[in-house]
Amino acid sequence: MTRIHDVGGKRTTKPIDVAEDETPFKADWEGRAWGINEALEGHPGWTLDWWRYVRELIPAEDYLTRPYFDQWMQVYAAMMVDSDVASVAEIASGKAQRPKPNFGQPMGAGDVARISRIARDFRRPATQPPIFAVGDAVHTKTIGGNAHTRLPGYAMDKTGTVHALRGNHLLPDAGARGEEVAEPLYTIAFKAADLWPEAKGRRDTVFVDLWESYFERR
Amino acid sequence: MTSHDSKKIVEIHEHLHSDLPSDPALRVKALESLLVEQGMIDSAAIDAWIDLYAEEIGPKRGAHVVAKAWIDPSFRARLLADGTAAISELGYQGHATGHVIAVENTPAVHNLVVCTLCSCYPFTLLGISPGWYRLQEYRSRAVRDPRGVLQEFGVMIGDDVEIRVWDSTAELRYLVLPLRPEGSDGLGEEALAQLVTRNSMIGTDVLQPIARGR
Image 1 (cartoon, chains in turn orange, blue):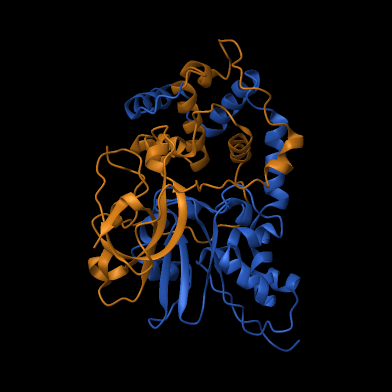
Image 2: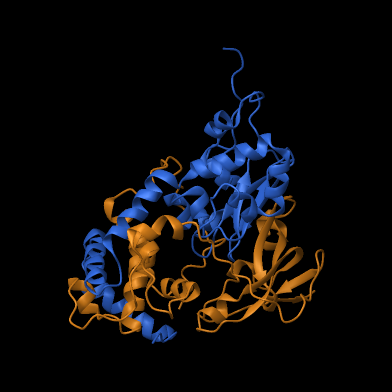
């Protein structure tokens, strides 16, 4: 497993398509996909981090080539098969071969305006105070394997400084395993020169939002 | 039950790869049909979400926030202190904007936002993300060569200016507060909002001076 999604710092050769306009959807199916994403409440086990993890596990050939919203739909398809809500054959044909599951009434058109204004808060009450303070020097860990984590590869085993404390946030690594655990979240500042060999002498800074268990005191 | 089992998911992805039609439009159509038949989704709700993002939710919301911050110092202070509380005053809070952090450009600092691990974006503030924001080229290079990336966007940042790159690895969502264009003195909130581009709120654009006179 190559952590195909973890691309920070990788060399790429293709130029960025900077001329793109501000139209939200480039095709009708993209709008449908977005609408499905917003309107589907689905199975209680489908947390945001499980969703992200399922996307990270898309095989490289599809992850690198299939359109963005198409991959989002593949995530729902995979979660549905995994949770035994549908089979691959049912998803391919668009026809159910089983009774309706009981997830209650789906979101109606009249609910959309109200729901669109609900912002989720990912903080949870803290059981202990944060260990680190602004200005502390920290050194990040290396988290190997293909488990879900939000510590990017380029920021592993690197030294940075605590820039800000952000509250006690749900830990994605646990969320992807179906557990609800919260930890102090920090924004850590890394000097570009401490991340990239060619950045020596550059004054730029890269800020990464990291949970307390991702690093140790320097 | 949800398995939380990566091996099982990899196998499912392989089955989907071989059994689903290749055309994304056909895939989405089949998925929607199945979800509707199973009572998990209402097509009218999908239509309502599309309309909302086609008409109401988009970069113009972020532009409104920026323009207001330029002309109202107390709003600017509230925005920098607690982004979500400030955008909630305008009713712009929602999907992915529960923890908004506004970062301010100054003559000495230019901010640039990226998500290297996926493509996290403040949807209810800036609308649907641009394609380039989601692709490997931008995501990989923004943290390593921000000056090169900005040059591709036609933005030159002097060596005396610090570039601050914000990698959205948690549920915090960053909004760049661009520098107010030169020559925009005296313009009202609405006229100022017209000058704010989507890319300037991600950090891949700087706003050009306005020609004086006429």
